[in-house]
Length: 207
Image: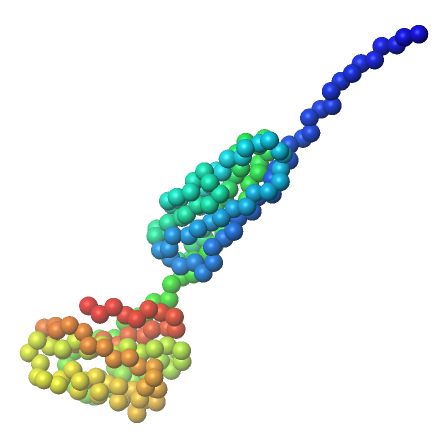
């Protein structure tokens, strides 16, 4: 006896995406060049995947087409989020991963007041307001910057610096450890600047 048998090949196994993950950089700061690294494991064998990167902000300055990219963040502002996305080419499926980092709003010093060669009573009134702000923020640092006048007498800068610090410490109760004094370049006339710097802020720039 005999019979007919139909032989068919088994359908190919459905493609499987590899496990794709991205390692985000830590301790991000504005203006840095950040490095994003990826790991790709598993997936359908025999496929040579390609690396396709995109970023939501900043500029990729190196590594496109590889497992690691470098991103310039100089054009990013504080408060923004940067998301790096990796899509593995060569697969019929969407084999991708993302990783995001956030940039805090930078803490900056604030020029609270400035005055020229005014009377001591007027200066005390300015320093009273400055002391109130310092008391409202116990972690802040006070910067007193004195710019000498072109025709000022010798010792004028030291006198004005000592007078301001003495009043803040002895009359207003501000700790001397919280006050930093600086001397700026010569100006047309003596000038005093009062700066309030929250904790973590960079010192003010002398100009």
